[in-house]
Amino acid sequence: GQNIDQPTEMTATEGAIVQINCTYQTSGFNGLFWYQQHAGEAPTFLSYNVLDGLEEKGRFSSFLSRSKGYSYLLLKELQMKDSASYLCASWVKAAGNKLTFGGGTRVLVKP
Amino acid sequence: DGGITQSPKYLFRKEGQNVTLSCEQNLNHDAMYWYRQDPGQGLRLIYYSQIVNDFQKGDIAEGYSVSREKKESFPLTVTSAQKNPTAFYLCASSNLGADTGELFFGEGSRLTVL
Image (cartoon, rainbow over all chains, first blue to last red; front, side, top):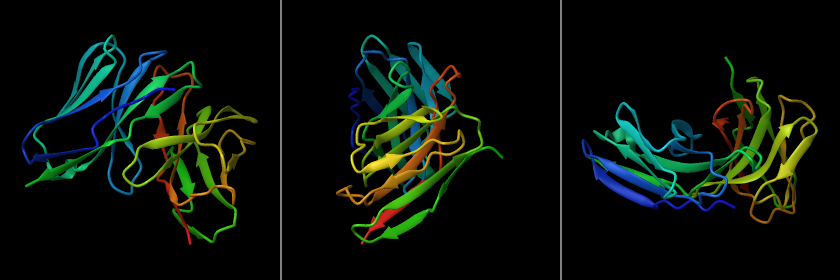
């Protein structure tokens, strides 16, 4: 199956930038998702990358390199409410349209 | 409003008891999924279904069972055979005809075994 790796935890200061890296296995890969999850809540969709390059959405951007099996999520102008877990997920359509999730990166934003 | 409804939100059970978690969606999605999440961990796939009356095991199906008698409904039973059932359970759905495999999640059910 897919192996998704991302750091366990990151800490940053309010107003700063944080980059969360994610590596995945490229076999059968169709696309890469990022979800945000606050403690005790369901994940919410942040971004989807299918082509190489950077997708920007306000303060959040996501990058994909298909050949390297690598993605990152960039959070700019950090706010306290950005303290959450960020889940990287690989989509393999041929394998039952499943998403395989990494362990999540817990981001703590300090004042 | 369209969405996914899970119930109950919190559930306590004694060891040796089966419990069923409900998941209903009115998004007209073909596929439905059950994930399990342990504290500080990512999501692990239990079962998924792409069509009515058919479902497949995910990565951690042992001790769980599902049914898909209606397109809108995908209940999960946590049986007494599941050794460590205390967890946060998330139901999700997706539209197989869409360009992406985006999952839409319910609010989750937190199961605690006493």
